[in-house]
Length: 530
Image (cartoon, rainbow, N blue to C red):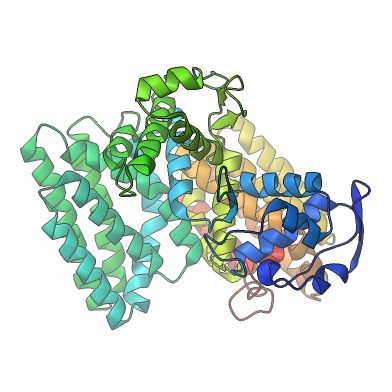
């Protein structure tokens, strides 16, 4: 294959890029009218997400890689730039540099979402409400599913937070580890990812509270967290799922109420103090630490609105003087922010750097990539919807406005007209969901909705294709349309309980072909969205 045009007649399907088997690249299935760089992206992306290319693995030098793939260096560079924009590789400059594989994790996503929500004036009350939707159902599952080793692990994390009560940063780190472990042990990867996205935000507010100049208040908050976690552990050990859910709800409620007394709950969240406290802890090397310090400070200035969309940073020389670091170290700091989609960085001293503020679309895509990397199946995603969607829709019913209700009434009629056309029915349904989500009026829950919507859009072709082969799908569409009408009626009456029940019924109506026992439900999100 040669690289003479913008389209390709072949698609790389190599099982292992770095293995050196050039033959696999010469025997590629035909796929017309696809831009070659995008085909390379698709295959390399899949190899990264399914683990064939390991984290921290360095790809061959550019010239060697272009020869092996039989593409031009320009095409290869475009593919690598796309992968870098998806945070799947990092391009390192200088001697020993090149393309290095990254395994997408929650830390970067959580930091990005925290910045996004701070700039949207999200309050601690908004975050608490989002957590109260996501986490109690997960806590209930822990009491049902957790084994003895899992419970011992939670006990060790609980002991760690007890030991750290006198150190604000250490305590917040231990508290976050416990909370994340609970959602991870729920057995639902989607819930764990969504909950993890908000962990950094909440931890930042707890840190601001217990790291204050009010030792008595700090002690009360830390003690409340420890007591609440202890009560949850007791419920989990007794396999009392209802009590486990209740104790977690109480934990979120009482901890937040303690911070309300300090007038924090209705204020805009501020994650910058925690970021600054954590800066420099990731590595022992002083050069690495200094680069992270600078990246953290610039990120914090964006959060504090001292830097806005389109602002240009000072020259490299001025920045190097301000932070008292070398230019190579400064460039690495700026590349960290470029990888986080917060800077447009042009090479050279005269190029400079332009600020980009975060967007919901990017946040949702980053979370979706983590979902794919963790081997999440569609049944797992659907189960997460069943756990959290009815509660969200109950909130929607209590807050929805006249204009949004009009859109839902129109969708109701469109659904009735498309029962026999599954493709149109699915598209109309998800469009109606998006409208309903917009009525929740909580930036944190809106981000959750956007993440879920991103997944829906990605799997839509596979869902429609699979549904066409099911003889009873039209009957299911009719049931779903009928239940949707119940939801619209409940929302019109602002009846939260009835709306939540109707939405739960709608998810149950379509669960038969997407649950854990179905062939479709077992398919990985990576396959459905790839």
